[in-house]
Image 1 (cartoon, rainbow, N blue to C red):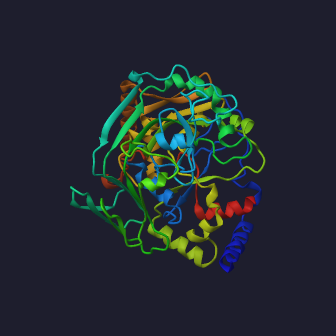
Image 2 (tube, rainbow, N blue to C red):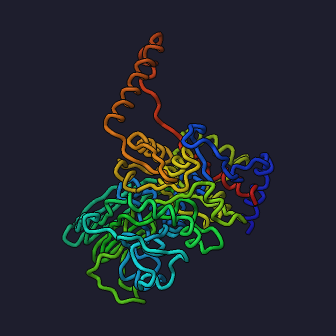
Image 3 (cartoon, one colour):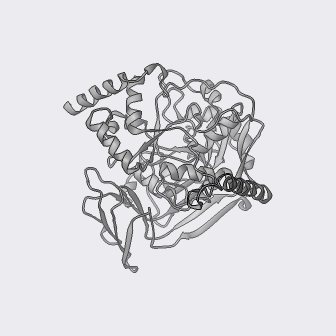
Length: 494
C-alpha cells in the first residue's frame, strides 16, 4: 500500500508539471478532409485505436505480452499464447477449435475469443443463439478451390524461437531440447507432433459483406454497452496453424533479474524449469468438460485474419461515447546508452517514473496484444478519412517479415516495406491494399536512386566518408509513447 501511495503521489507531481488542457489521450473526433488528400504527415492517430506504448522489457506477470511480440516476426501470423482458447467457451467450439470464417478477437490473455462464424447459419450448434442481432451468413461459402490445406506444414519436432535463444537438441526420438538466453524477453514454441496450415486464398469477395456488417459486429462483440475491444481488433479468420500437441514458454519470469533464461523440454517430462520462464503445455485434462479426440488437430498456435477497422467517424457514430477507456498495446524500444543514463537520472530525481512503477499505475485490464494492423489500418484511414472501413489481410505483412524482436523500429520498418510493395486503394467506402505492379516498384526505386545521386552531387564538397550515401528510410508511422509518459497522461485524464 505504501508503494502504491508513493506512485500515486509521484504521478500527481509529474502530471501537475505539464499542461493538462491538451492531453494527447483526449481523443477528438477527426475533422473531414478531402478524400485521398495528403493533408497529414506521419505519425498518424485515428480515433478508437489503442495507444502504442513502448517498453524496455515485457511484464513477467503477463506472459502473453512478451510471447506475442517474440514470435510475431517469425512470419506465421499472430502467436496464440493459449491454444485451447477459453475452456469455459461453448463445448462445440472446444471440440473443433478455430476455423476459417470465425469472427473474433485476440484478448488480453492471449486467447482467441470466438464470437460467430460467417459461413454457418444462426441455428448452427456452434452459435448457440449468440449471433449478432442483424446476422445473416455469407453466401455462398468458399469452395475447395478457394481453400488451401497443408498437412504437416510444421514437421514433428519443430521448435520456433525468438532471436537470441540458443537451442541444443539432445534427442530427436523422444524430443529432448534445452534452451538458454540472456535476452531481456523471448518466446518458445515446441511442436512434438508438428502442425497443419489452412488458408482462405481469396478474400476480396468478402469486402462488401464486411463493410455492411462491421459496425454491428463491433457493437455485438463489445456487448452493446461498453468498449472492451478496440478499433482494429476484430478479425475474420482467414488462416490458422493447428496442432495436436504443443508446449510454449515466455520470459521474463516475474522477479528474475538480470534476465537469464534456462529451460529444458522433453517429451516425457515436459518442461524442466529453473524459475526463469512461464511455461505451459497441452494436456487432455484441460478438456474435462468435453470429450476430445486426441488425433484431431484443433489447438490453434498461430492465427491470421482479415482485419476490420472502422474510420474514426464511423467508430464515433457506432460505439458508446461515455467513459471511453484508454486501451493500449506494447512494443519494445531499445534506447541508446546516453538515453538510458538520462532516464536513470530523471528517475532518481523523481522527474520520471521507473518502468516498473509506470506499469503498476497503468491498468493491465486495458492491455491487448500488439498487431501490425493497428499501424497499417491507421495509415489507410488517415489517407481516406471518409471511407467507412479499412480491411487488411495479415498475409501481407506475414510474407514480408524477416525476423526481428518487434521493437518499434522493427515494426515501423515492416510497415514501410508494406507500403513500398502495396498501394492504398479505396472503392465504395472500403480502403485496402493491392500489390503494386513490378513497373511501379521499379519506377519508385529509380526515383530513390536518382535522389541519392543528386544528394551525392550536392554534398560533393565533403570528404567521401562524410557524404550521405542513402536517403533514410525510417518512418514513424503511428504516434508512440513511453510507458512512463503514458502513466502520467493516464493520471491526468482521470
